[in-house]
Amino acid sequence: AILINQAGRVPIIGTWLVNLVLGGDTFGAQSFARIVGLHMLWLPGIIIVVVSFHLYLVIKNGISEPPRVGRPVDPRRYRAWYDAMLRREGVPFWPDALWRDVVFSAAVVTALIVIAWTKGPPDLSLPPDPTIITATPRPDFYFLWYFGLLALSPSNYENKIIVGAPIALVIVLFLIPILGYKGERHPARRPWAVVFVLMTLFTVGFYTIEGHVAPWSPDYADQPLPASVVGSLTGPARLGADLFHEKGCEFCHNIAGQGGIRGPNLGDIGDKMTPEQMTIQISRGSTNMPAFGAILTTDQLNDLVAFLQTQRRTNYVPK
Image 1 (cartoon, one colour):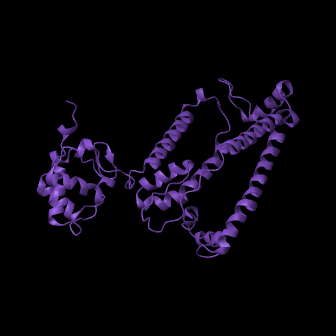
Image 2 (cartoon, rainbow, N blue to C red):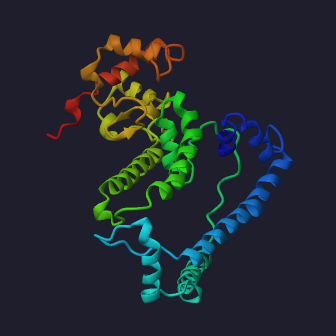
């Protein structure tokens, strides 16, 4: 559904793409038939065509030899040099080199069979429960970086990334063999290419971690504050500590390593804000914080402020 919604943002043809996949403007009975047909017929067919063309080029032109320092590619003489090198050292793709693919493919299929036999499918989750109103959806791990990138990007850049980034990637991949077909191929002589690869790996890794942590989302599964925080509290401060969890403050704010990270850490809030400032902040809210003035009584608000006033930096400094 997410990918289909993103396809709908493509200018001019977006609506046509959605109708093509769904068979209409929304999901229906025909949508599942079309999606299954797309995955089982069209996509495998496209893959077969592309792979077959790739193998044809391999058989016709050969494969790229391992790069060596000091052996640049000269387009004017490369074909003759490559043909001479093949006559001296080369082996035919069929059947010699193809056996490597056969062995590797057989090993992958065998590994999948062993894992399926020993581990089996994952356990089914609980039946749908309409009373659960909170959800923290996550894509599969290989899409976490994309999830994190879109979540952390400004909202006005979202469509540009969804539509523009794949187009730019295709253009770059298309131009690489046209513009980068000569010169040194060894990584030791191509520092900018190495830097680009490392930056790409770092970027994907960074956004994968961010997508897994999802600091922009409240942590609805968090537990009440530990005894190290509330164990010594009494009176209004203890009541305020209970409210801190009951009203969901702990889902966004962290104290002593417990809680969410969407909002500021409140472990030293007593050193930064006066009771009056806390009362105004809680009652009125802020840009990313809802206003709690309408859902808290005066006594509850005072108890919550009393608890927050106990949270000071000295509480968590080793003695």
